[in-house]
Image 1: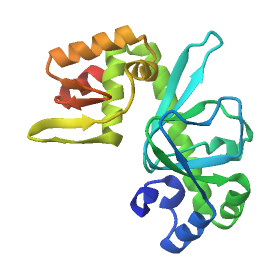
Image 2: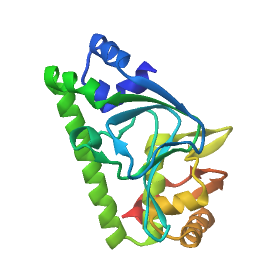
Image 3: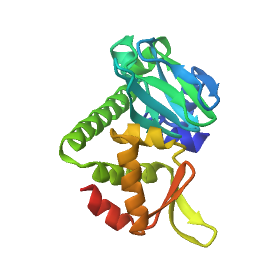
Image 4: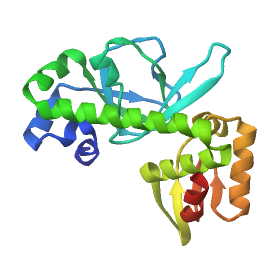
Length: 227
């Protein structure tokens, strides 16, 4: 667990003694696949660090359409916005797999922000990265076609969840645990259009499709297509 927590912005700025103290003030939460951690519109006053598993963050439109804004994995943090600007949750958080989380409430965080400026800086830096990523996503929706967005999404998922394929296979295996519909929601396109792009990539030999996973065989060409 220590290695995972060290990847989180919340713990990265602390020494071992401070990390252990902060850990004692956090609450462990265990979810099964499909369990909702919170829903869009719920009041929020906690941030979460993923220890094991994956969480998807999504929003729904008035007509029932859904969009995934992020997939969070071990060492990643979310929900921190509610600690600085309390209000209703802007997304729904749902477990994609069996998941273990650590939660930190507003009251427990405040002493750390006052006594440890490095914690405040780390959280602000994490929020800035999230904002930058949101801006990139908006730009992609405007300027990139669906195949380009699919290629970029696969590469992004590979940086966080990719592992050598193994078993005498080449490439990077990305166990994203998303259904075809969820992958389409992450890209912001219809399932049919995304499936067409994936089939084209597979035919070109850039990827190999597997159940809730994909093996990236040619990241160079995928990166070129993502531009």
